[in-house]
Length: 361
Image (cartoon, rainbow, N blue to C red; front, side, top):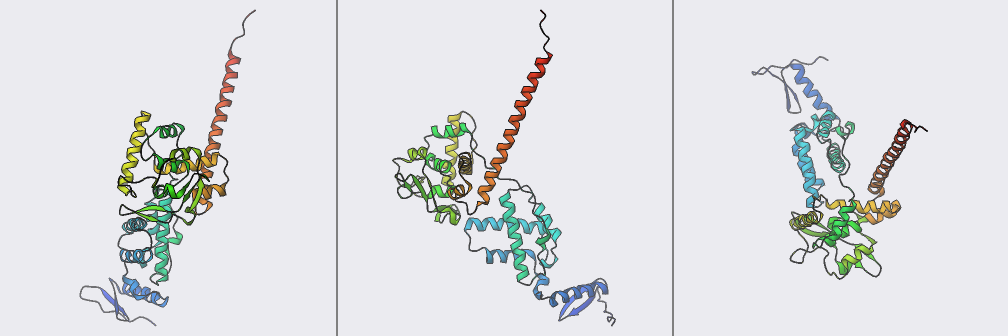
């Protein structure tokens, strides 16, 4: 049955109505198309308010609803990522966001760390999965988008001269540094260590029970980062010698209590400054490099993957395997370079020998 003609408004546009809602277009066909598209959404179960739900509004509500239970630091990280995504998409309505929009937003974070890219893309997928469950959109536009290329972690194992200069230090933060380097403790775990409670010089073990996290810069004692973070690790002789005679917090503030984030930064900067003075050159070490160095030490010592995972406090073998695999690749590449160098030196020596004229009798 042919559609009835629409009357033209005084401004030149046409209006089609459906259940009290007006759909306007420059032509009758455009007005009908908008109305029919809306009818299909309603018939598919999409809620009526979807027609006017902009991304910024939904994203803000979603973040407060689904991520309110995380720590303040984590929530702030999520909020920054969602803000970056919203800025990349703009004020588009949820129903108008298509896979190419998602892909463009993903491309904008290409080159960031693997961890950042993973968290960002998981957040975005979760946001749109909730929008589907809330019947605001028909399908998740993220499903066809590909995560962008990311960079591997920038953490590295310390060089031998860096270990040596750390051992020469007498800085007050050295015991915490040594626990990160020779027990694989995370920063927050080291700051929470109570030597009288957690260090057993008889059994030669260190037990990680808690970790310090910072909320608006203030220290808060909490469970370790993962369930596997609560663990007992070997107390190496070099570390036992460093901690011998100490009592209380491993790394207390000047007031003898847990360090604030600012206090930690000052202690770390002061420690690096002393290392620079001792070494006579620039020393560039990140706190997590110490933990990475511990994992490298486990690898070099032939510690099996399962044990390494336990001592590192990793929730599963994925992260431990990633480090072990990376180290294996590095060692293989170094061995290949060494082999090529040796063969080239030998060939060069043979060529030079052939070119040397024989002495006449």
